[in-house]
Image (tube, rainbow, N blue to C red; front, side):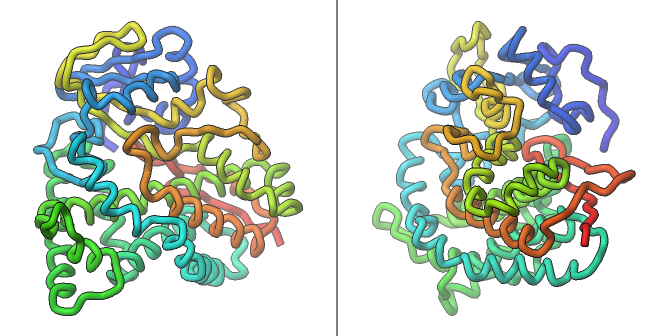
Length: 396
């Protein structure tokens, strides 16, 4: 972690890389929501805005006239625009780019991945075996979406370390060091170009072959479109879901009553997963202001970056009763963990499948476990929040 000036007033100088934010952002958000619902900061090029209320986040997510999706990460220094359709697309390009991917992520297609996902989870649990301690993030959560998305793309599952390095450079190092982000982009492009050449010679039943065969307005997809979508699928399909799995494990390790209840009532798991998604939403997106506007009493200037925090929206007491409590039997749960508006996550069915199977298989194998005393859970910085180190003691 680099040396950063500590934040003295979150309302006018927020920094989502500050250690206080990384370790426990919820009190910060609660304070801002009560006194300054849209915070600002000049730490980021052209200034940045941070809305904390659900309704403000929702309004921005639906407003493509004033807020563009062309930049989806708040960075200290803006990078050249790099398409990652459909997530970086605005109307009218967005709808056809999204429709192109919908069949591949439809519920019936995702259901076909259940057996493979379950096998991955069981093999990881077998590797933990009879150990009294393990790392729930490093030994388990971080491997599941890596291997699932590799399976979907038709690339070697053994390339997981490479994928994790790119994620670190794009989402963590690259926010403060443009060269690190661009290095990862170039490496991903080279990797996928090699895979594309293999598919041109011998198409398969995978997402890369699917994109190469796609009809987009009567024409094949451009090289930039294919590469941008593949980068998106890799980045968006991995770190977000392993963070959700890890946060769920952390909660159950730290809250024995909830863990015991899920073991006793496995039918409650889908409801609990929705609550974990709300309470520990991993994904914060971004927008760029394109036209001057005012929201929540705050003027937004063109060029400014917006930290569009679905996690903060999901903790808004105006939207959710007992917003700060995790209620695994919460019946009404219109959370925004997968986003709002036209950019709502295409992979929500996949993420739910992976999270549900990962927790289900863990509880079957290790019904009693706790956070290891004397060791610290380390949370990730910046755009995606989840445990990076999660020391767990397994009780036999």
